[in-house]
Figure 1 (cartoon, helix red, strand yellow):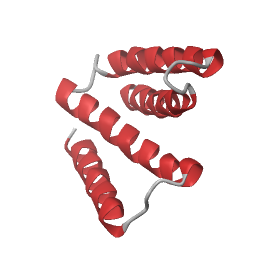
Figure 2: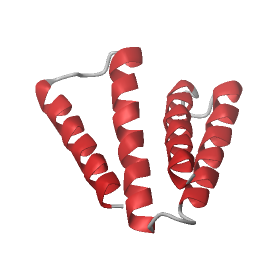
Figure 3: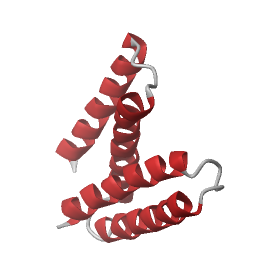
Length: 104
C-alpha cells in the first residue's frame, strides 16, 4: 500500500506544480486554491508512504517522479524546451528513480 500512497503523492505533486504555474504568482484564486490543496494532499500521502518506506528512498522517488512529470507536462502543455540535453537529464532521473525502487 505504501507504493500506492507514493504514486498518489507524486500525482498530486505534479498537479500542484501545474496549478502553481496557472496561479500566475498567486494572482488567480482558483488555481491558487488548487495548488494549496494538491500540495497538501501530496504531503499527506507522502507521510503515509513513509510509514513503511525508508525516508530517503520515498522522498527521492517522490521528488524524482514529480520532476519528470512536471518536465514532461511543461513540454506538452507550455511548450518548454525538449532539447536533447534536457531529455537525457530527465532520463537519468528516471533511471535513478527506478534504481531506488528496485533497492527498496
